[in-house]
Amino acid sequence: KCNEESLPFEIFSGDVVQFGVDVTENNRKTTHNCIIIEVKLYHSDGNEALPRR
Image 1 (cartoon, helix red, strand yellow):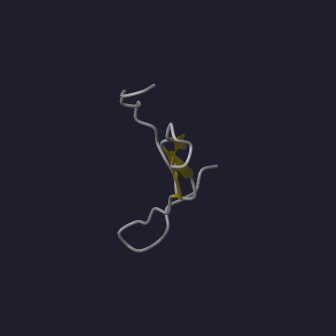
Image 2 (image 1 turned 90 degrees about the vertical axis):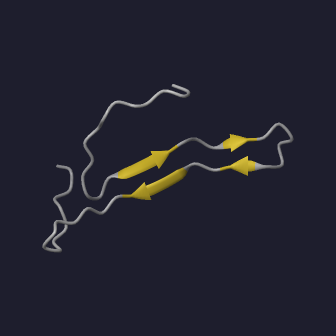
Image 3 (image 1 turned 30 degrees about the vertical axis):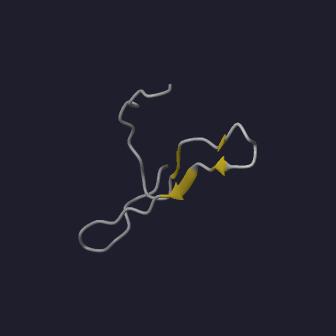
């Protein structure tokens, strides 16, 4: 929902997270893209955290 904070959600190493959505301005010439990332989490000893099962 617009302008509402999402509930907390546990993520794991290897998860793909999307921030926002693609938006096209009224002039249809300018598009603002969402951001999609793959999360890599590491423990303090340098080992990667476990992926989602």
